[in-house]
Length: 188
Ligand code: FNR
Image (cartoon, rainbow, N blue to C red):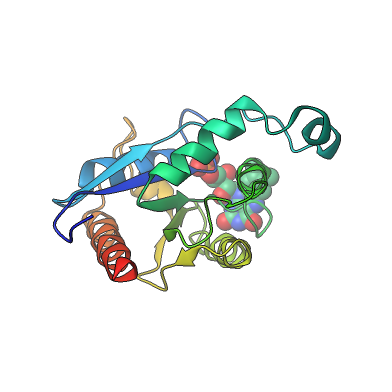
């Protein structure tokens, strides 16, 4: 890939509820992607819970295999996490766990940016720190910053679910531009 080619980013969130702030933040990232960056939001909610016996008898479930291939095919990842009890939701952890269960697992070396939203004051920081630790364990190349912490999320989205806060929009643009640069640097 040359330096000028489009960076394909796979976008994953840890919440699929209709009014999810994190799902809406990911949708904003799809729209705000700078030139040369394309973000695809992928819905993986039908992946079954990890089960070592099922894996031993039937291998990786089809839904988890699709996610694994999507991670393989992407140049970079954007993970948008809610905070549940100071950590990431089980749904997201499950997707990472299944994705890590393969030789040449696709998260290793993958340039990755993280962000998150919470109605509270901390903006998902504790979940993001846990996510960073988990991703380090699977060898992802997690970007150090900018940190995008969408606190008081209820004030930053319209009733229709659009991100209206201009400061947050700019943080997301900067994050994606940084991710594209990071991805290109790692390829050199
Ligand atoms: C939460 N929430 C929450 N918020 C937070 O800032 N810190 C936390 O530790 C928790 N813990 C927590 C646990 C559980 C089980 C739930 C369901 C919720 C609130 C959470 O941030 C809020 O519900 C968000 O709106 C969830 O993200 P989505 O679905 O809007 O993307």
